[in-house]
Length: 175
Image (cartoon, rainbow, N blue to C red):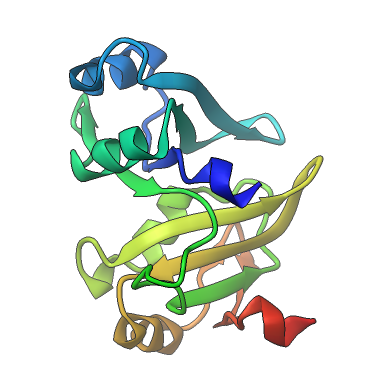
């Protein structure tokens, strides 16, 4: 359900050597029972540099998000709230749709493509999956202006595939 995902944060830009203990140590200030579950995203046998951390409550997830990212080695891991954005969420309509993505695509490849837009411009990356990777994802930016600039950059070319990029439409319009 949508409500349950709001007790979750998503970690992105995770290095391959990140561990459960890195996450538990970063959030130990919330108490020993704050984290209910850690899910590391693997698709087609590849670690995607992403994890979802389920907290014991929505309040805990909000505190975890407010604490910011963690550092593993020399890598800065980003933290975002998960789930369907409520009406008050400021980035709700700042998304682009990526289609035709190769199986080996990573969050890092997307961050690298858009790095010329500046730091902290990408709020979230979400890949659509069911039983397997579907070659489709959404990138949420921190402003509508950044979405326009991202679209003007053109499509990223990853693993020899030119990904299709367009403005994401609200779900209601797609039905």
